[in-house]
Amino acid sequence: MAKKKIVIQTKYEVHGAEKVKGAYEGVGNEAQKAGNKVGGVNTQVKKTSGLIKSLKNMSGALGITAGVVVLGSAFRSAFNNVRKFSKANSNLAAVLNTTKGEIKELTAQQKQLGASTEFSASQVANAQIELAKMGFTMKQIGESTAGVLSLASASGAGLSESAEVMSATLKGFGLNASESGRVADTMAASFVNSSL
Image (cartoon, rainbow, N blue to C red):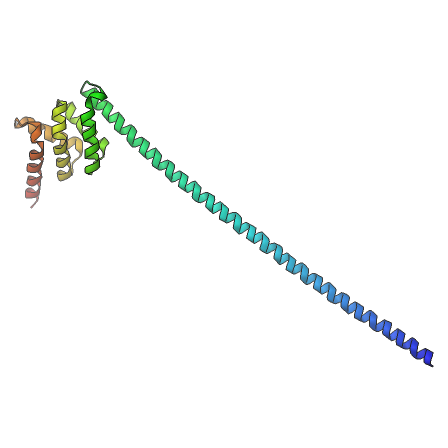
């Protein structure tokens, strides 16, 4: 009987070992599945992290691109202003039947008034062109430009209209161009008094 007992125990032990082995394999398979899921999550995290880095790099590139566009626009605007200023001075020289080199004093005045008034240097040059068209000499233009700007500011009229009014007033009353400041002040006072 001892033999039988040993055989049964062996069978039982083998059968128990197979169960334990199966359980271990099941646990191993479940662990493998869990590991695969964790690995899949890990892969997704890596992909998401890569995507975030790509977006971050792209947003940096877009920021640089936007900066370049703004800078390019500023350069284009500055270039256009210089071009307008140069063209206005060429036109002024042509109306005065002279060269750009000979109107340096007027050009300097345009820059000075463009920096110190609400008008740009190009607008000042265009006002001087209007005065030149009305027969003013370079000296008269230099003397009356500030008055024209003052008149335009006070009246709200454009520079061209203000140049016409200033020219007509100076010539109509036989005044010198150097009196344009006084004329502008008188007109501004009359605008204020008449609107009360």
